[in-house]
Amino acid sequence: MSTFKEFLEFQLLSVGEYSIKTYDILVALLIVGVTRVILWGIKKALFRQQKSKKLDEGNTYAIYQIIKYVVWIIAIVLMLDTIGIKITVILAGSAALLVGIGLGLQQTFNDVISGIILLSERSIKVGDLLEVDGDIVKIQNIGLRTSTGLNRDEISIIIPNSLITTSKVINWSHQSKKARFRIDVGVAYGSDVDKVIKILEESANEHPEVTDTSLIEARLMDFGNSSLDFSVLFYSKNIFRIHKVKSDIRRTINKKFNENGITIPFPQMDVHMKPESAAQEGVKKSRRKN
Image (cartoon, rainbow, N blue to C red):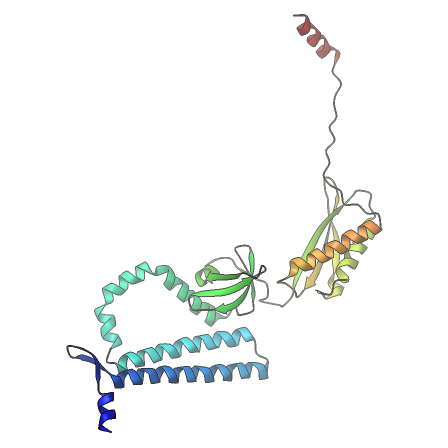
């Protein structure tokens, strides 16, 4: 028993009046272990609630992230206090240093504050589809400083949180899990307008990824320089892979146009050569004589 007591009171580090004993390290490790267990229990409870009550996965994740950061901050403060380090003393003694660090890490702090805003405001959640800098990204993780997403090329994108909070970002899935898209096409002048509209609507209606087929609408948009310009509008839930959906519909449109003798024109330019006047011919002849 005395040997175990000596082991616990063994000094691992001693600087002046300050010392760290084996007991302090064991208590700190115990705090880490208890913190992990608590977070594991909270995570299980939250996601069990999400499944039973059909809560939004993104909201559940955001709540868990906030709880996790708060619990870890409390645990770190307790660990420092256990080994004899007072947070108030550290902050008071290093105020000038913290100002310098704050200036140097201003952008990092900006990202961290933005992360807290995203997690608390929950305007953007895990699973949302964002358009950031012209790229469509599916959010997989919202961290304290950065968020991680997957673009349409299956490439992982790391986005600073400040970019999301301070820039214009389109959230394709914020209000609804579906969105409206359009395909533009031009046909030759003289084509049957009603037949073109019918073909466009049928082509969109045949695709399995198109939802709310009653809302499919084809329109004559304009009289172009070389073509009659049409658009077909449709809804789809497959926002992330919409380019594939559009490609399939375009192929169907092209096939139906060929079957019905409807042509898609290309820009053409007619060049008219004016005949030379008699005066111009006389000038040329006089120049030849000279």
